[in-house]
Length: 168
Image (cartoon, rainbow, N blue to C red; front, side, top):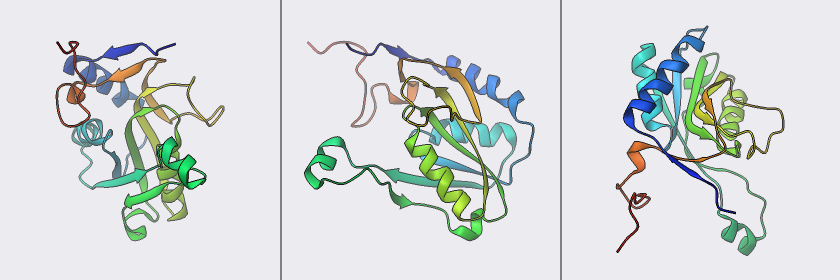
């Protein structure tokens, strides 16, 4: 059975950001944006919360096909990550667009903890039905969903573009 899709507008993204902002009861020393999905919401939150220290983390998990071929467990590959000194003893907001399985943002959070940082996780959408981490959930999220979310920055752009109309 195909998962239903939900295509968001920029106004809906603004509403999600507006829903998140009052949830923050702490100040953050920096924000760690998980690329690529977290770039837009992370930038919006950095601006709204006046967080000037913006860091990025790029994580890759082998695709299922590569996992079968290599017969390996899905360990993350950190393509880009802040230095430990940028994380140690700091309160960090780790931002991604969606918590589906949760493995990407959890991998980033665990690496921040290993570096001595104090991370809290934040996503626009949380999908508890897909999460691989039982009762664990993001520290902050704007909405719960079971849909495949298509953000406005994913529509008709780049190699991952989503076509709104079926091709002729």
